[in-house]
Length: 422
Image (tube, rainbow, N blue to C red):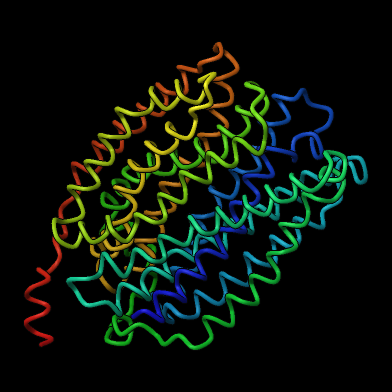
């Protein structure tokens, strides 16, 4: 299990690095490079729109790779999704800007962002299921939380590279070629990820199946449509929080509040470090007390914290970190157990498709629109964008209602597992 968990963690970290580095670039530099005829705010909105395309593609990727995972196994999904995401990310770093090829530049960006999302849509389901289906019943939450640490590491790596480049390059150098370096680095990371995953074995949960779904998506929609909609709605607030903190606030802080790029990135990265470190610990609580109570608590905390978070973002005393930290704590209270919770909700024969589509549907609802809507709402307000806080609070209450309608999948007590294993 430790070797499997480490390989899953490394793989998700690499793929989410690819996905997150685009979000950071969209907040800082893609607007003026690919939409120079727009005003600064309109350029940022346009860059965030291409960012959102990746979320629209993710459910499609989960359908494509979920079909492979339910029909052919979880392991092939990990290799194919990593290759697709890595190749499209490297290609983003090679796209000429608007000044060179005109309108073809943002169109190419749009296509490559779509391919990024397609690959990432398959990654999560394959990595999580391979871990969950190997893990003992009473420790599914713990072991499946390691792939959930991967996004935090991927984000830190992506933003660490950008922060380092920002500190060593001039603004002109960063705009000319420096922003491309993090995308090119994805090629090296993809090779490392493929090497780590080359020794993984297929999950026993898949090998034990005797009857595979002929068309997994059709079966999910026919038999689990209500569950699919509820899981997508329930996860929306997690995505909304994460991308409000890591993408929208970065653009708002640097452009509207005049906070330095380094300060904003440091505050955001500090909160993500805490999130990643606490993920396995919170997952252990899920193994002991159940998944649903933690999800409900995280949603409630998010609903209560969005207004303080926005107030702290605009704080003249630079207390942005505290706002981000509270948001990330509410986020991880939910998402530390999601990797175990979603697979337990779906039947094994359609588990890869159902869990992955539900997970990525939440990304469309909460992740794709949040930077765009928040930027538009902030433009209408003063220094403190209360409209953004109201929007995030509404999503939190919506997700809370969805979680309340989902059943508990209380795991086998740890003591019972230990008794059977000696």
